[in-house]
Every structure is written in structure tokens, then in C-alpha cells.
Image 1: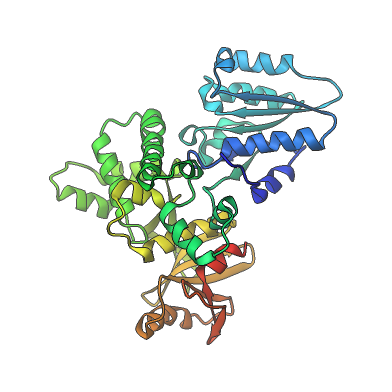
Image 2: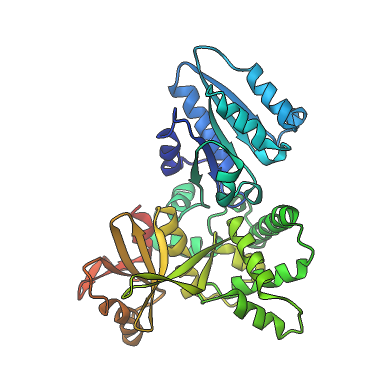
Length: 397
């Protein structure tokens, strides 16, 4: 498989070399965490002369004897070298029983610079502070962006490239398959494995049929407002005896494993977050095609999903904006920066254009406003709103 540099992630890792944090690489299955760790190892080899690298990949049978925390801890200590920078790189750390005990012990010794990846359900963002007694630094990895997709295939026509990316997405492992059905089989298998092996294993889920139905509902309702209660009502109409707290827990498990990202609502006028009804977006939009089929492709929803994940990839906090009962697709916030964004597939129709810009025109503050669509035109302004082609916007990062 061809490898391309993922510079933004590498920069984040390189910038924390030597800090006392435990560096934790997270992200959905098969998004490239292990390859990123390998690239980082190569960087250390080539740039740090006094480095001693202790690299353990629990996917390989040669490390089978280290599957208890005591064996792991003692093995790493046996490889420690005085007067050198000792780097510990561990892939799929959750395969080691009580791995957190080994990591905490190594960290407490203050002798190692520690980097780990692991299965998402066992290495959750919300659990890091509980698992590790030292401070953690999380590097969040996503599937390939459109820009990375273009680089991987060396594509020159950005509009044709975007049409292809919409169909095949950012799960790079699928790129090895030439047949579209084989690509989608691979992507569906990744998603099913993520649910079966990770979520069901950790949370000991017995009602697997309910989990499958919740997944299908969320996939089918990408960009729609959803809540545990309304999903319970829909599924309850099928004579299912379920409780909304169970549904809410299953939804949270899916987000914990980076299958979905929950986007909360933000009251723009009242400047407050709203607690009821959120939107859910897939970590990669092609999971929806792989699981539900491609016959009824709703491009508007898919483009919205792509923009949501790209904003998260760029480090924004992302919310759904609410203003006078109208909705702004995204409010993207990063420190003092704020951007209001609408997303549309096609704005060539006057009525569609007016519908998309109307909510933005009602916002009275001075923060930038943007409408992103497949215009195939250069950027232009409309009453203070920046109109941007989607392919151009995705490539600008």
C-alpha cells in the first residue's frame, strides 16, 4: 500500500517530543494510527541521534509473551539505555492485560517518552484521565481528508476527484481494491468489526439487534436532529420493548469508538448550548454507503458530513447554529475565531440559494459567514457572505 506523509499529525507529535505527557493516538479503526506511529519511528531514527526506540506492536505474534502488564513493564525496562533519549512506542496497547499499570509505572519513572495507540473502545478520550495517573496528550487521527485523497492518487482535476472521494471516502485500506463492491465490502467489514470486536466486547452488549437498528437509524438520519427519545419512539413503533436510557447509552458507545461524532446545538442569539436534540455524523461518510447501499445517495447530507469531519480535522469545536427558529449548518469555533457555515450540493437554483443564505443574513455579529457548495466557480462575495466551492475549500487546508 502506498504511504503519503500526514504532515499535520506528524507536526503535532513532533511538537510534543520530550514533554512529560503520555501521548495517545486515537481515531476510528483503520484510519492510519499504526502507520502514523511507524512514520514517527522513522522520523526519530533519522533526526534524533541519541535515541533508543523501544517499539512494541501487539498485532505481531513475536510480542505475545508481553501480554501481561508485568511482562511488558519488565521488558521495556530491560531495554532502557542510560544517557540516551528512550522512546516507548506501543501499538494496540489494549491487548496487554492491565496495560495502564505498565504505562503508569513507566511514566512514573520519568525515564521514557511514551507514545501509544489502541482500540478505541478501550482507549477512550473520556477515560484517559482515569486510566493514566500522568497527564495525557491526545492526537486525534481521522480517515483520509479530500486533500490526502488527491495526493494519494495524484489527481489533477479537483472536481472529478471530489466526485470520486464522495463515493469512496477516506478509508485508505479500501483503495487497494479495484472493484467498487469489494471496496464497500471492506469498509462495511471495518465498521462491523469496530462494533462487534470493540463496543460489544467492552460493554458486554447482549441486545445486538438493537445496536444494529440504532446504527442504521443514525446512518439514515445523518444531518437530521436526533435524540435517544425520538429513536426510542421510532424503534418502539416496531413493537420493540426498549428504554431511551439504553438507546442513549448505545449512542454514546458509538461516539466513544469514533464511529459517529455528536454535534450539539448552539443558540446564536442567546449564546448558549442547547441540551436537546443533536446531530450525528459518521467518521467517514462511506460507512453509510457500505452499510445501506448507494442507490439513494443524498448528496446534501453527505457533503454536510464531509464538511463536519473536515472542521473537526482542522481542530474546530463544531456546533449546529440556531437563530430565530432557523438553522445554520455549522458554527465552527477555535479560540477567538468563529465561522458560520452553510453547506449545499447545488445553489444554481435561485430559491435554493436564497434558502441557504437567508439564515446567514440574519446573523448580526461581525464573524465570517460562508456558504460552501459544489459551485465549480472561483470564490465570490454575496452581501458579506463568502461563496466557496467545496473542492477548493477542502484543498485549502
